[in-house]
Amino acid sequence: MMNAHQLYTVARCLVALMFLMSAVGKASSWQETSGLMRKHHIPFATVSLVASFVLEVVGGIFLALGLFMVPLTWLLIIYVLAATVSFPLQDLMTNNGRAQGLQLLGSNLAIVGGLIALVACAITGI
Image 1: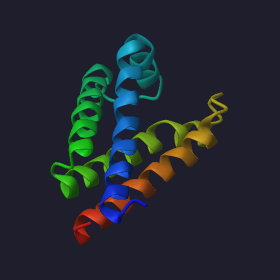
Image 2: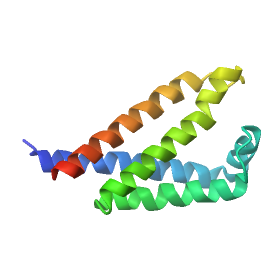
Image 3: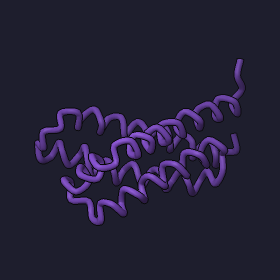
Image 4: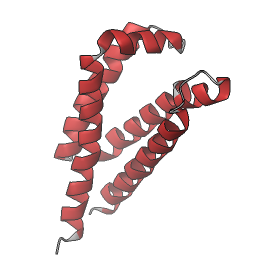
């Protein structure tokens, strides 16, 4: 049976993997992602895309390694919430034709919940 620290490490790595996979998705469809960001009126779409890519790569690696957990995790929470407001929530409110908006909203909120749990574990020293 796994102890609490081992479970925390597995949880950290799974959340980190999600951010790294998202970065790979951005890299493999750079033009489409940039176009989607422009469609959603994200300021400086290319710069924002580069920043989100770097945050997902560096954040994913640091999360997997357990580095700077509390500030990093809060930064990732803010990032996911901003992305949620910018994409799926905007799509739902404007009926923008992206049917998966509700599913993305739900999954982003679940990610935020997982990140909050990781912050709690980091603060308590698990």
